[in-house]
Image (cartoon, rainbow, N blue to C red; front, top):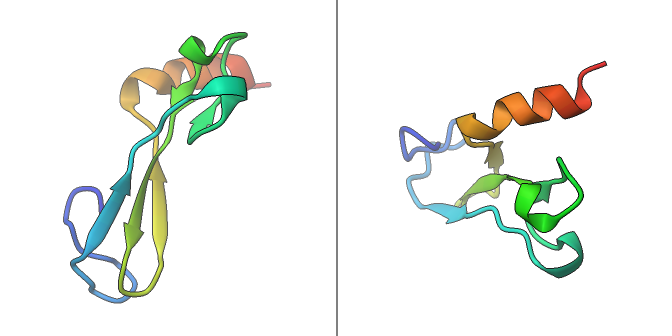
Length: 72
């Protein structure tokens, strides 16, 4: 959906983007990576307004920080 603008489940073309954000107390679409909201990885959500299917995408620049923080 992010690249095609088309829902893979129903073929709908009305896609809503809810951009990742970090607000007070960590509220928002994010994954904590450090101790402050400024270090969170943002999670963008793409939602099909026809069937409700959604996808979550994390910007490439945050993937390395997530791997370092959460890999075991």
